[in-house]
Length: 112
Image 1 (spheres, helix red, strand yellow):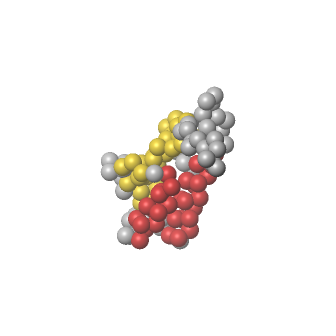
Image 2 (cartoon, one colour; image 1 turned 90 degrees about the vertical axis):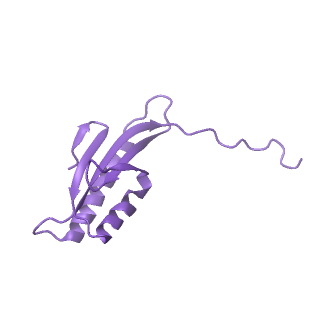
């Protein structure tokens, strides 16, 4: 289970090579745990004036070297770390309210 510092933050160091366990299954379980946390946070009710839940993410081989990354790139970063032979990684996910910006206004008369 992911350990949380507060109800909207997770900071954890994941180990990918655990003695007596299949490394591929540990990797898939780790990815599943991260996806479940994100889904759980996104199900929370939104405050007034908020469009969606966004996340600030940090990823690195340990807590001191973790740098800001985009949420969508986490799985690719984990896969790259495994390909390089890494033993584990540190991940921080902080949920925050997100508001969509104004979209492009459609033309009033496209025939003009």
